[in-house]
Length: 307
Image (cartoon, rainbow, N blue to C red; front, top):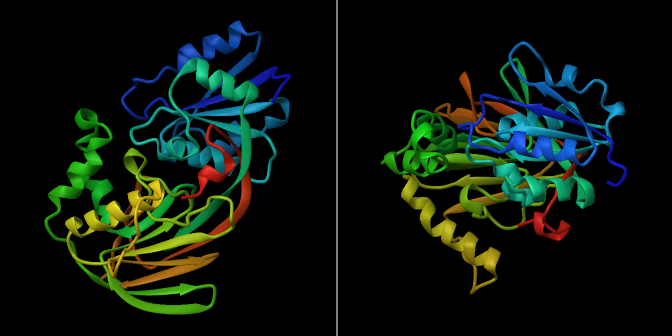
């Protein structure tokens, strides 16, 4: 990305705990002779309006949490302009998957010399409303965990997710029907995740075989009725990532791949996407892949984006 002359920065000032270094990064760009235009994402503005004139820029920087990065990515869907993720939220899972850290010099180098990849995006329909997601959507335990972590984030940061999960001694196990690319599967579990990227909190792989550029979702059904049932699966995921020993998930999870999915559950389960709980909504939900819809700058090698 040489000849960088004009850069658009879109910031969500309410993201995270305000401990990022965006201003330092902006000042470095200006010092290097780059014209910087800053815009704020808020309830009064839409990502589409903020990115309507991207033909005038060589790159877009989205500064915020996963929800901010995701909505800016969707606004750029179908365009060829590269998007740099500036991790300014709590978990910053999209940045974790791309290998991006909150460091002004490193981010500037990525903007000038980094590689990019076309990344899949996704659409989620809940009731009559449609949402875009980039990292992960899910029903059940993960949505409950995210909701429970909100009050803990200001003091615990990313550890709030772990504490919220461990506080759930038991969760409801539901009858689940998955309609995937014309195929129907009936099963039971406490959660269903629709994964596009594969690394979760602390860089732990969700499971193996998740690729954000393959035009497919990875669907993970979590079995059991307690968060502690996830511990053996997490250990197996780490073993798979490190290529240490034989990996055996047993019957703790079920994994599928598809382009489009509808999820029905009995009882109904809460819904989340990219760390945002869909308020006053529950299953059923529908999701579909938008193949290679956005160009995202990455620090990892291309093959390292897949788990």
